[in-house]
Length: 161
Ligand SMILES: [Zn+2]
Image: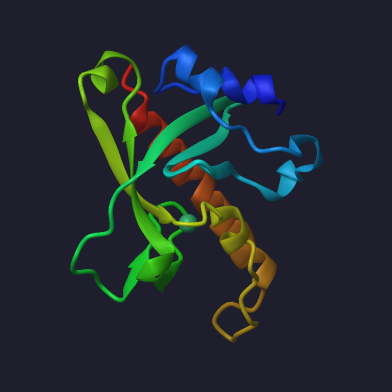
C-alpha cells in the first residue's frame, strides 16, 4: 500500500481532509503479512486516529476520533476488534463518522479499540501450550481470522452508502 493508496482509501472524510492526513513514514518497509490493518494517531493531534485495512483487494481507510476517557471505568476492558482483555488504560473509545451524508449529518459509530491500534500484534501472540488447546499456531490462526471478520464488520458499519 502506497501513500497515495492510503490517502484515496478514506471513506469517511472529504478528499481535502484525506490529503492533509499525516501518513506514517516508512510504508515501504512495513510487513503487511503481519498486519490486518494499519492504525496510527496523528502526531500533532493525538485525538485523531486512522485505520486502513482491505475490503477484498481494495484499501479502505477510516478516520477515527479518540473519545475522552469516561470518569468511571472498569479496570479491565476488551478491544472490540481483537477481543484482547487488558487493563482499561490500554483500551479507548474511538468514534468514526459514518461515510457520506450520514457522517456529514453527525452520524457516528463508536467502538472500543486497543489504544495503541496494535490489534495485529496482540492476535499474533501465541498462547502457552495447554491440554485444552495443544496447538498455539491454531489459536493464533483463529484469532487472526476473528480479527479480520470483526474488522470487516466494523468497515461495513461505518460505510453507510
Ligand atoms: Zn485490539
